Length: 381
Length: 137
Picture 1 (spheres, one colour):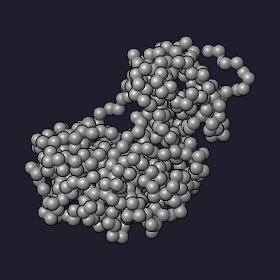
Picture 2 (cartoon, chains in turn yellow, red):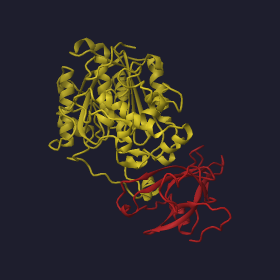
Picture 3 (tube, one colour):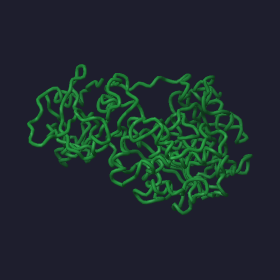
Picture 4 (cartoon, rainbow over the protein chains, first blue to last red):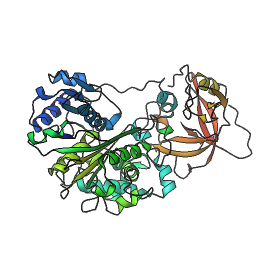
């Protein structure tokens, strides 16, 4: 696929992340939006396109910011939505539908201020065919494939636990990470059981926070205060709305398909990737992601992480902000994964990797339901 | 509490009658679950309901320690996905087997059973014991 070059010109998170009981969901969107637009050296008057998930949705966010947009995208497919927004913004900019797109995320995931209550209707497919068996959110569903994977590929409990250990080493370098104390495999396995085989430290945080991005045409790159981050490849793919209907519990079709599309558009292979973010709502997701993107063969993701390849000093820096397991996880974490990719390419990350040229972001939405993949680069394609 | 819809009503009527009814395609012959009006394999709308054997194997599960509302008494309890002998998979509960990793062994043979939940009967599974007659409801 070819087309006009597109960049991320502005990127920022809310001033604070973590426990923010004095911020409503909408406030988090607004604060993140203001920070990102300022980061791009622009004002709200420059924004003509808005993307975010509902609620509050793009029209509410735009209105609160005083923007009457020419283009909106309310794609809401869980935590990867913001990666899809970037992809859709690239297409909109190339099509001429919008010039400068603002993508916002704000979620009071922990404090639940100004959030819509979560209800699953009993007549929905999941309400009829999953909820009656005692499911309660991602800890009871996202986790179900793991034992099948462990049986098929021999992944050990210790290897699964090590995913959390490796990411904590990155978090220890990041003052904004919620958990920064170094942990061991024994610490992880001694933490409270949430849903066997997952212990508490193998499950993501639940936090408040937000982030936003400004996306625009690459030919404007010279006009911005920060170095441009080129979006050289994007992909999206979907699989199943219900975990029980996942085609194969040992691999994510959505991760694989989205990754192949993004890598093909960018014209890269895994050897070109200097920095990697894989959405980690639970410790197994980076394993599935490494295998789906082709960094390792099936069954090798756990040992690859346990051998130290993804931690500080390893050859493939992964989840360098600490990830959803240690940095922050508002519920829809994808925005924070993108933010870290942008920081790394710009050279302004807390745990900065040595001169990365290419960063890949793999997002997950729902329970292996949908995936978005972005290839970010210091240079144009 | 599950609320049947027009497209799923035969499934729930079957469960109330002690039968696990799923669908299959009359064109490509693929059985499928969950209930919907067209075949997910080939798109045909020539589909029919049939009564599955009720035999299954344990595909994967978690043992949940943070109970959903109404499940407090059962915790920790297993939430399982089983593979029906006909091929499709479904989420379910495993009855009559302690919710421990030692007792819940992947690929163990299972047999459908039904239990009342409010206005509906819910398919659940028990360990299959060779030679025993089908458990009466």
